Amino acid sequence: MKLNFFKLIIFVLIGFFILLFYVWLQISSERLGYDLEKLRLRLKEEKNLNTQLKITVDSLSSPERLGEIANEMNLQPPTKSQIIEIE
Image 1 (spheres, helix red, strand yellow):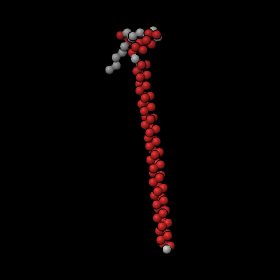
Image 2 (cartoon, rainbow, N blue to C red; image 1 turned 90 degrees about the vertical axis):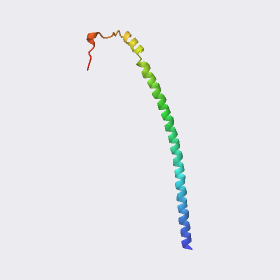
Image 3 (tube, rainbow, N blue to C red; image 1 turned 60 degrees about the horizontal axis):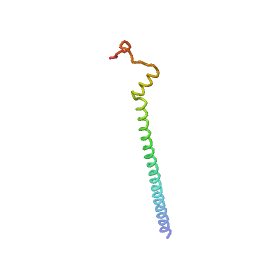
Image 4 (cartoon, one colour; image 1 turned 30 degrees about the vertical axis):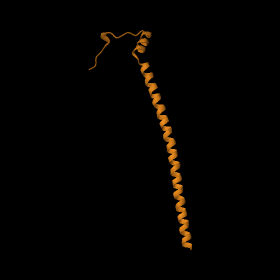
């Protein structure tokens, strides 16, 4: 009688821990899914920012804009004597 009761308690405890482990796995899986979705959203935002920054760099370094700034600062193209070729 005692042996059967002891086996039953062990069986119930093992079942309880298996169930507890399963619940923990499910919760962890859900949490990882939410974290993954947040990372995907952040990646999308970072890609959009990167695109905007590339457009800004292109517009700020355009030859037309640089020419206008050079004219405003009274800069002129270098003469041949001012150009040094490095080999």
